[in-house]
Image (cartoon, rainbow, N blue to C red; front, side, top):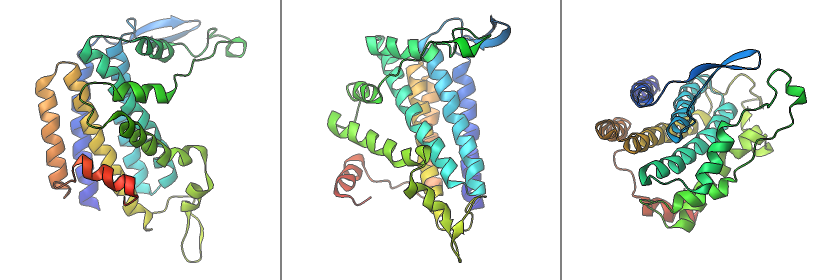
Length: 266
C-alpha cells in the first residue's frame, strides 16, 4: 500500500509542476476592492483563466483525496470525486472552444455565470438578491460530444458521463446505500473516523487510481489547448509510466470497456 501511495505522490508532484507552467501563461489575479474588502480577481475574465481555476481545483482535489484515502474516509472521497467529474467536463468543454478559436453562446453563458460575484452587495450579503444562473450539465455534456476528437458516438458518450456522475452523487446527497458503506466490522457499527482495514479501502484505491490517471489526461488536454506541445508530450509519457508502474499497462480499449458497461459486467 505504501508503494502505491508513493506512486500517487510522484504523479501529483508532476501535476503541480505542470499546473505552474500553464498558470504562468496567463495574467495573474489582481488584488481589487469589493466593498470594504480586498480580494483577488482576474481583471480579464478570460476563458483560459477559467480553465486554470478549474485545473487548480482538479489538482487540489487529488491532493485532498489522497489525505482522505490514507485515513479511510470513503464518504468524503466520494464527494470530492463527484466534483472532479464536473471539473473534467468543464475543462473539456472550455478547451474545445480554445482549440477551435470559437466560443458559442453556451460558452459565453457559462463564463458569465462562472465569473459572477456571489453577492451584489458584498458589505451586506443579507440584502443581496442576485442569483447565480445554473447551466444545465446536460447541455455541457452535449456540447462536449459534438467537439472534434470525441472517441464515442454522442449518445454513448453522454450516457457514460452521466453514469460516472451518478456513481458518486449519493455521497454528495447522503443516500442511504452510500452511507451504509460506513457500517462494518464485528460487531457491525458506524465507522465515524474512517474505515481503514476494511475491504472498501481496496475499492477506494482503485477509484483513486482512475481519478489520478484522468487528472493526467485532462491536464494534457489543457496543455494542448494552450499550445504547450512539449508539456503535453511529457504528460502523455507520465500517463504511460504511471500505467506501467501500477500494473495497468495493458488497459482494455475504449470499445471493450463500453461493451462491458452496456452488459453490466464492470
